Image (tube, rainbow, N blue to C red):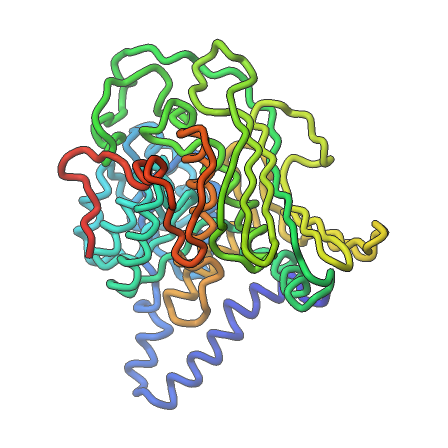
Length: 448
């Protein structure tokens, strides 16, 4: 494959800019030309949520070639704000303001775009507030806490005509894009099955114990759209993922989002006809983990296609040899895809082609970032400037995210159910009760 990361960055940051400027200049005055490439081409950014995903954004934002001004660092935890300010002071000439309430930032008309990297329950409400205030949004996964929020995100994006990039950064992998294009062209024949997996060795988590919030935490704002509850020990620091459904979406929303997106993309399918799961808490049974820690899920699609999910959060045995990835099966062969590249196999199982990714991205470790995250942000910036199409527009991200919500609902009601594969609506009254959630009064996302 002749394309590489250097050529990609050169193309996005210079070649496309040149074509854009050339076209615009012939129809504009010198004054408007200066607005295009001068200070008015600068994008003012705010980041909400300064935890483990922050390293995924720092390189693209601090790179002077991207012409970004970091105006605000926002987090409900004071120590996170101070830590993030220290990081950017070493890599950027800007001195962003520190803020704990994102709503104050939305009022600043100078801010063009917002990164939403909060706990899951804040993602869609925050993104919709951002769009209402005229901001573009880089929305970390999962893009929604429930199925209803996904549909609201799409309606808001259309209504306000804003750029909304979902943070499933493997969509910006050159190698993943190439092999999926080849799959769609028939390199392994007619596709029929994908197996997506994530295996990690997460350990015990503390049992919840009611206590006062830690110093510096705005517990009221942390809860935001979620109904109010008392603070329990260690909730704010990542373990909100596993402490019930108030804030998190379990491992499905946390990591399956990525691999199921690749599977759906490769098979070229939309909504499944039905979903069924086998799931439970099987490790460290007396600890504070309240969700399933293992799940097998089955999504049946039309045209006799199927996606299987194999998730083990707390059993570190890697039966596939790596911690995460996706297998795609076709009538003439198969492909294995992960963040490190891909392998193409013949129908007889012979390795035909192996391409290693030139982009390095974090695998199963907490937080992280890497070249794919950087390219994903650069694509977001260029889409705002009208120079590129988004690699992961929200209307596509929402479809993949629905798979994770279907599986979570199936687990919560302990039965399988059918789905309208044209609309994505659930054909089960019990399951439909979990289509949305209860919100703290005044925090509901209004329909538009």
